[in-house]
Image (cartoon, rainbow, N blue to C red; front, side, top):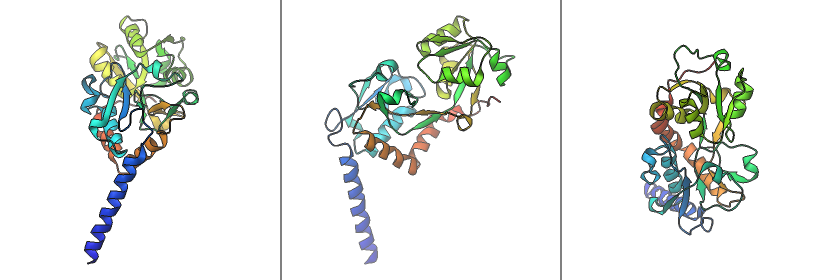
Length: 269
């Protein structure tokens, strides 16, 4: 009898949990019953595989669908759209509920948009045109000519932690930094580790990920958050879903599946 009562009680609890999930985002999304998620144009490996977020393959695509499920949405109710990085971080109304594009959470950005709790803490990695003969040391880093993207956290890391001998050249996006590296204008650049691995393998011929800075050793580690319109009532629901995914290990499992290739890059001492 006790067994039957316990099963019934568990069933009631499960139904209650489902109801909570289903009601979590009610009336808080752009389109009722739909969750509109933005990514980059294009979106790159390992965040999205083959520029197809609807496949659910790639770290951010997989997190997006797992989050949607946790919030009570079916996979068919996830709607994808595209934005540029700079467009998304501007103040004002958005055409998405959430945007996942490796946005670092910063105090300055948080004044004009909202961020979820972090879903990934990314180590910064050094990408060079050719790694032969370059030591993985801070002394060697100082002698390199750097390129940085002005709107990312790479600039303060280069200026404050590396403090190179020559002033870095500043660009408006990652693509222009890579083109500058191809042209021999700069020797090195900082990217989050998964992006650096992709660029070295696919985009920059002869490129190499020289080393990484441990995120837990940095005074200001690079936390990625989902971007939302300032004051978005959906934030509480998103944060609750992320907390549940951290607690049950599902977020860590997705990271292990899609970002495990990031291991093996030496630390810069």
